[in-house]
Image (cartoon, rainbow, N blue to C red; front, side, top):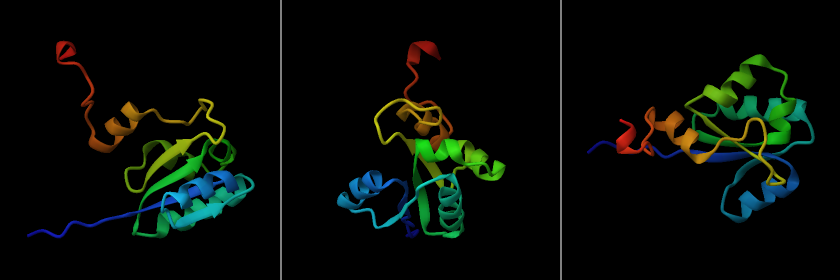
Length: 116
């Protein structure tokens, strides 16, 4: 039987976002004050083979200057990035569920059969 590998979820955001995810059981997190801090944290997390998903606060994602990291936010499959707003407002990088599924699976499973 093939062994199933499990990955960790990590969070990069402000104190409130980090605290919210810690309450849900996430243990790998970084509290960041600005884009520079977020770049350093994301860089470390991308080097960790055990991290499969990185949740990033949208306000920090906007501040990331490193081109490689900005591209990873929108196109990386491993780790998969999920950008969320700490205030609940729709942000430039914030993904909706349908787009995350398409990125993860490569197909639009929510597409209606009549559209096929």
